[in-house]
Image 1 (spheres, rainbow, N blue to C red):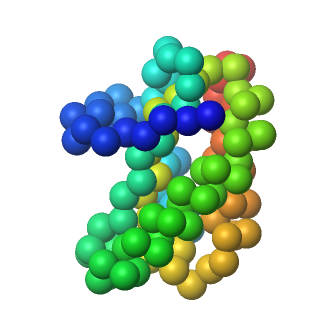
Image 2 (cartoon, helix red, strand yellow; image 1 turned 30 degrees about the vertical axis):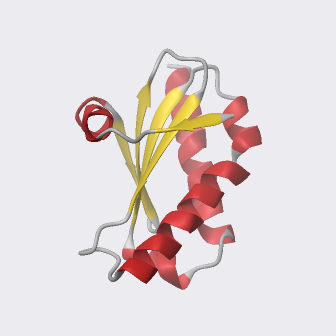
Amino acid sequence: MHAILRDPDEFQHVYRNGKRYDGVFITVFVLDNQGQRHRIGVTASKKAIGNAVQRNRAKRLLRETFRSSASVLSSLSGRYDWVLNARAKVLNEKLDAPLREFGEIVAKVEKSELL
């Protein structure tokens, strides 16, 4: 189960205090929220992605990536705020490539939990 980040201050808090993970398709910012559930925020900038149709498609892909990763996320001991920023190459891919990359990022987060 997850909630949505909506307030710009929440996004800024994650950007300033969270850990950044860069991938080919997405950039992910993660911050432990000490809460009961994961929270997600998705962005797709006009500069990186393009017009509104492309930005909306990119955001849909990233939201579905997050939803499809629910079983992996539930294995994490903490609950986090996640901000997923779309990168230009995400538009050229189907769901499997961003999903694989997000799984790798979650594995890195899990590894850093154990340290």
